[in-house]
Amino acid sequence: MSRHILLIDDNANDVELALTALGDTETAPAQVSVALGGQEALSLLRRARTEGALPDLVLLDLKMPQMDGLAVLDAIRAEPGLETLPVVMLTTSGEGRDIRESYAHGASGYVVKPLDFTQFREALRTIQAFWTTLNRVPRPS
Image 1 (tube, rainbow, N blue to C red):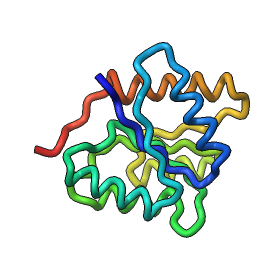
Image 2 (cartoon, one colour):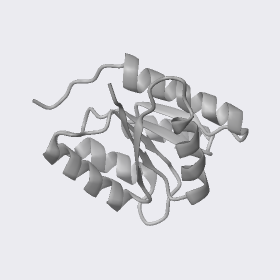
Image 3 (tube, rainbow, N blue to C red):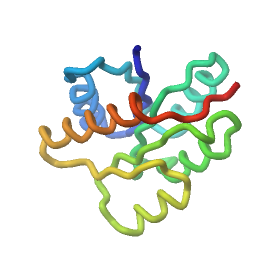
Image 4 (tube, one colour):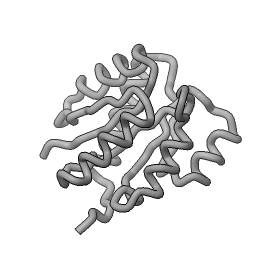
């Protein structure tokens, strides 16, 4: 069964690394869509909801211009049909304040991007395996 991940990140290098890591798995690879900012991501999610094709997981960067990750998360949690969508913050910030705020805004998880690619790939494989295979969330009826 194909799994779908929406990656929301404004950094082209981080997007490329994530796509490489997620595509380089021994398990069934996930289909990955990319949004380079919050407004684009919300448009994609609204369209996916209308089409009945929501992603299984959203990976969301915290530090983005125009609309930061917390604002995107707030919009997702306020949007009917998206409120239970798993959203994992995937960011370079390990600051306690950022972690607390992310959970307070409704994050499903918080992962600090490892600097080493091997560790980054392993982290993404673990996230993908849990959130797209093991975890179950209610789906809109």
